[in-house]
Image (cartoon, rainbow, N blue to C red):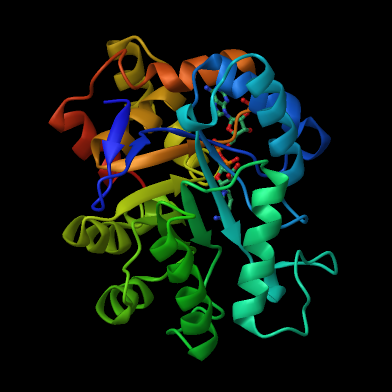
Length: 281
Ligand SMILES: NC(=O)c1ccc[n+]([C@@H]2O[C@H](COP(=O)([O-])OP(=O)(O)OC[C@H]3O[C@@H](n4cnc5c(N)ncnc54)[C@H](OP(=O)(O)O)[C@@H]3O)[C@@H](O)[C@H]2O)c1
């Protein structure tokens, strides 16, 4: 269960390590995550929340220890001007195709690599529909997929109607979606259902931070006790069993190992999964 296959036949890890908000600790934590067993790393070329260059520093240190680039799955994002501060990795006055090209090139440089495993659009320009700017950015990303400098392309922070439209009209539909999951929204059920129908991998983030009520729920504690896990592990296992690829943002080595343990340590029954699905709705 520790590997999954995308619709375009890329093998990717079933659980990924997220590097948002790690600041100057980013390099140390990425190294620790890989040493702890993570092979998938998520970042973004967006200095407000991520230190992509420090992810790259960790990769250099790991390479010195014999960790090969091909053994890792590197995912980064293009973030448009509205998601950036003044430190954009591109010329803000350039057209969008050029912005994507400059951001992509800078990501490769930061990560000391000549290809990405996954390149993700951090989010459409608006919450409502897709506009010409989104199509321009997507077309520029598709080009990197066509020439093979990224094995996959994807989209984040996407609404169900936007994803549906992208799948219908894009030359290359996304291989991956990355969204925040709230239990009260059925764990993003509408978007997950489109992903399932289209064969798109759904990556869920803030599974713990966005669902503190679920973590406190006595039913989750009861399940955790029965399967010999802690409630956080139960949530990650639940995510896996409903077909998600979870992201964790832990900063702790023991928690990294605890999180990865859910891939193999225990299973939830159908009844457990249904119980968790109904909490908060
Ligand atoms: N696309 C986007 O717009 C977007 C937005 C947000 C996030 N993301 C991605 O998703 C990643 C994860 O997001 P997140 O940081 O919100 O994830 P998260 O895993 O839901 O939250 C991290 C928190 O959970 C705790 N935690 C994790 N495993 C634990 C364990 N086994 N035991 C106890 N505590 C545990 C961590 O505490 P400790 O540090 O003490 O373990 C930390 O406080 C980000 O790093 C980023 O890559 C993407």
